Image 1: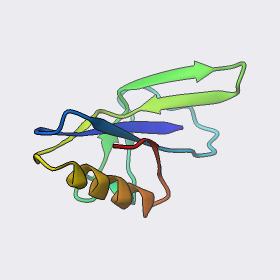
Image 2: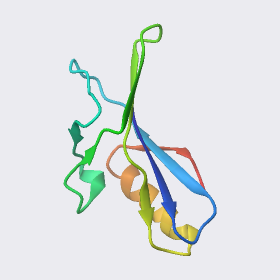
Image 3: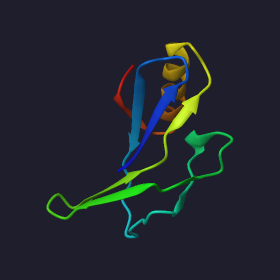
Image 4: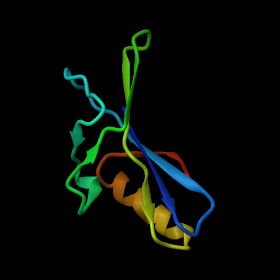
Length: 93
């Protein structure tokens, strides 16, 4: 599962999105991941990897995204964009 935190400069709360993939390759810190949800960003580098062998899961953290806005609705818009590309919101605003 890949996760990413999204915040806004003028909003106290933040949100998180995630996407689950089936893959035979094991990501490492520094690997580059691309997804249509990233918009103009071509990729994000993997920031952290946690392997849970008991659950047969690999959790991948991407760097946080900060939107320059004072409006929580802009965070919700960002989540909707991710959701339109198959991501889910794991921490709503």
